[in-house]
View 1 (cartoon, rainbow, N blue to C red):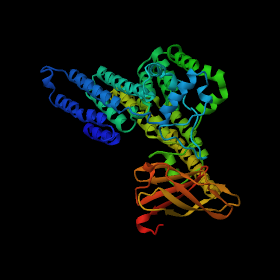
View 2 (view 1 turned 45 degrees about the vertical axis):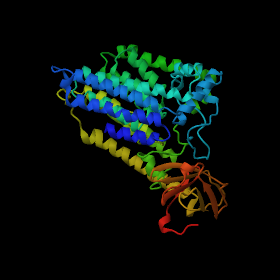
View 3 (view 1 turned 30 degrees about the horizontal axis):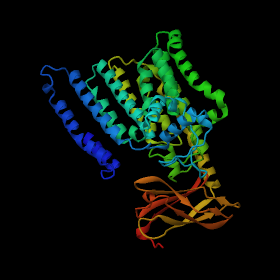
View 4 (view 1 turned 180 degrees about the vertical axis):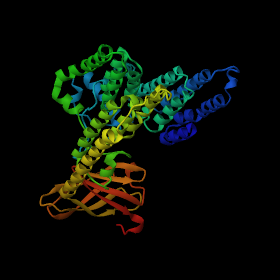
Length: 516
């Protein structure tokens, strides 16, 4: 598995365009061999060894290997999130409110909105950029590339892995080494910190908040909350967990809830005073103005065209499911207390945007829960399964199903768009299309977005000519790839044309069609 990851990373980094990084990754093969030898022959280190001492060596080698590889792979911001973090810091140091500034990514692909623009405001809580201030100052003083901010993501990834390993080692868990290897593999492939995914930072603070039952734990929960809105998904469950595991409610309030509240207040109040409107409108958001993306989740069923739904359905379903899961966790806490991280994963399925990190960030935390499970001491709780679980679940499913049918019918009736044909211009790779669109409503429709999908790229947004379709008429939209690497290199591809959140889908197989 580790060898596979090295091959995948080198494929993504491109051997020819970055030979130094590729060479270091290639040499890291021998670190892998060292790990395998130690795991298979631990007696080489100590004939009278204990498994924990061997694990320490393997954990150390794994961490150093990941650290070295990751550092060499930092060559850009990777995501617009990280570029916006840097620009937010620039604004802060220039005395401007980061939440009132308009941004535009220069070196990375932007996040597009359904209205045809890009996401150009800063939407994350304030600690998401404040935490980078020391490294930001260092980079500015020594005139280093700004994308080296990603180094902090890498360091936190290592801290997270080591933290989880130490917790497993304390419990003398024979599988304590598994998480550290798993985390490095998972993050390298799915949520690479060296490519601008900073979700490992809030995950680290959530881990501390979970394992500590003191002021540090409460403060860490506040910091995680002020790093990303994803942490909010775990907030009610973690507070319930701590409330029910503390010796007394008074200690919980004094040692955990108070530090949590103070850390949130200290980071929030200055920006509320500065510009409360811009702060609240940007940070408290469902993100439904942006194009839906992801390979798993409820939104996939909608934006794939299989069963399109009105955006408000996602907000209602998210809130309803969250309340049901909070009830379930609180009601049956003694039985499912260590299932705490499963609930944010379930809730994430109902988000409008379901990026990979929305699910993967919770996986390392599951290891911490596994360390705490004592299968010999699981309490026996009498549960009226039918009345206490099946009935509420049936009501929930009935409510959401009814709303889904209504949201779908309303969407279909209100959607003015139909694609009657797609015509590639030229030969493979296609970089221009003519799209024949029909508007069946008695008012003109302005096309806001053209999206092209091929098997290995689901999120190519193409530029297009003015796309105003007259009432009850057919119009042609000329769409073209903004960059050569976004050309269509497949004979089978799908085109979507958007009018705000209404869209029409058309799949074309050019090998079986007559084209221009």
